Length: 289
Length: 300
Image (cartoon, rainbow over all chains, first blue to last red; front, side, top):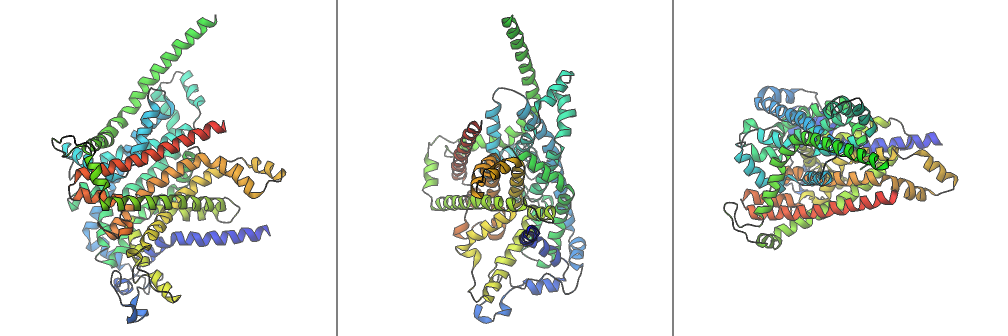
């Protein structure tokens, strides 16, 4: 009876899991089709088709298994669309500095918020929390003006710098550090270690899962960035892959699947690789609000 | 004796505190400087603009901009839609993710694999979501094929009342995994013997859920609600890519309004609308923080 319930529950949850994975499966399976097959399947998207004109011909054709497995779409993206690789590297060189910068800057600040006592700590933290909650559009104009004043317009620095100093990392790592007992730090203090040393030799090794989780989340978030580059980067050669992909959707659908699969691959790989860390990291930082 | 002791303690305390303070400045400085330049100052300037008639040498006009924004039909529509979206999708995602977390917390096979499947949508790029969105919800899309097979009429998903539903579905699909992990962590931190004791006392399932699960999950809840709200604002990306500047009336959000004010260089309306939105968020977060504090003192 217990076994039966276990099996039933597993089956039910597996069905839900498949629904969750559906878009990823579709993207990868469709990326292996020929362009003509894709065109045939999806050419009706965005067209008004008269219902009366016939049932079968009036709909797009969602298929999981390709007629011919083909790498032609990948070839098209990688060989005939040089802009793709260019923007891939744009994305990489935008996301890497943000991740590295934010992990460093945020872990320092989080330590101050979590483990050091100073006047106005709580109030300042609430301010951080508030700006984290604000949608990007709220500070759009002043950010634009500041980027302009600093001479950052149409430069990737206009995206990297705000990315580094966003409050999310501070918030997340602080949550994480709150769980680390004071006694660890006190013991080091007794041995005559300074704050910087305590931070570096005790705190940092202990919050590794938190930093890994933050890295994954920052990667996903910034790899998918749309609004900021749209506004700060006029020059198409400086734009990240996320913008390229949003444009490719409109025209050549045949290439879009392979481009999406390639775009998704680093995130899926990184996620699978770092998942245990990531989940442990989220869990530990989430336990006590 | 005691006085001397306290004196020494006090001095040491002050010295420790001062040391802490200096260290705090050092640790905080990089973050605080960047944070001020890129977030705090923009926010404060935005607030200032919202009370002026122009961004360059503007004069103070009091609440005029606010009046203009509040009386604008598109702002009201956007605010109502945003409120509706957040008000519906956040409670819904919390209920669903809690439900799934409890199921995943039971004994079942391939649990880790299932857990991964639920979190993986987090890494699906916006552009792929948009593509799926088109395939599923287009006028000629897959969902309409299925409806046709069931002999029901087609639905114009994105141009009808249904567009909000689609938005909620996409939001939940994308973000539920994150919440499930948070709740799983919360559930696993509740000591098992609480439930065992309750079993011995013959408590019902509902009673156990209300008095143990719910109570010990409240701190996690605070975090989940906060993250869910943040993520609910991000749905704009998908909506923007699929429907552009002016989507169907039902899914015209505050972010669309602000975006369009930005494009038409109407800074006053934009900053006033932004300030109103922030005021609403501030109010909500304050209430949440107050409730959390109440809850903590109640637990102690």
